[in-house]
Length: 262
Image 1: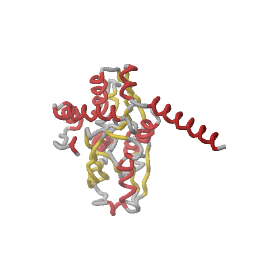
Image 2 (image 1 turned 180 degrees about the vertical axis):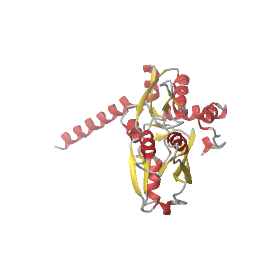
Image 3 (image 1 turned 90 degrees about the horizontal axis):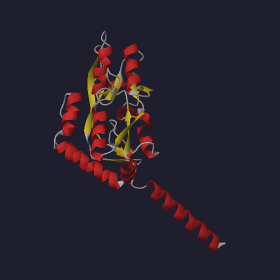
Image 4 (image 1 turned 135 degrees about the horizontal axis):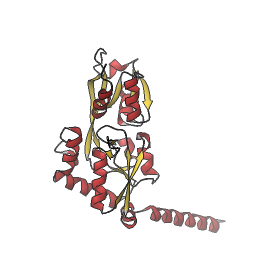
């Protein structure tokens, strides 16, 4: 019986090693296949959206194009929702995610990140006549957020008395705010700008800034060659100004000088 158990255990170990080897080295697989699958959640103003010519663009989309170019492979842009960003990496449906994904300790348990390549300002906005100065003022108020974002996590943690209404992506959140389904939102500054272009009669204004979040390129756990390549790529293109120029073109603000060392 012991012999059978030992054989079974050995077989299980072999299968685990084989499975790991088959999944290992995403960077090598990218180069062999001649394409890189980069997931982006579309509908986030300035980061990833469709322009007037129906072309995908934004700072994250252009960053994805630069990564593919420097890898020397074709870009396969995988369009997803915000809530699918972490699962998409975990399940291997994309090689990486470049999609305004904040670096958090909770997410680090499930995925790995590159060094920060951009930032995102988390804000609470509401009409002018609504008095909100801090998290405590959200108690009893109905506030819209995009599901599974840093905003969602932050409001859930810091405003337990708020009535949180969750939407699947930024585009749906914007539509809800424009149509009056919600008048208070927690989102990022670029979303507020895009929203007010459509909500002209009663625009929302910044009430307070929750925090500035560092954004990282997400990749599967344990893919050190890919992580090393991305870290070097981000640092090089930040230092030579490429990433800073791309970000400023879409967001009209500069990235912090110390970003990649955070």
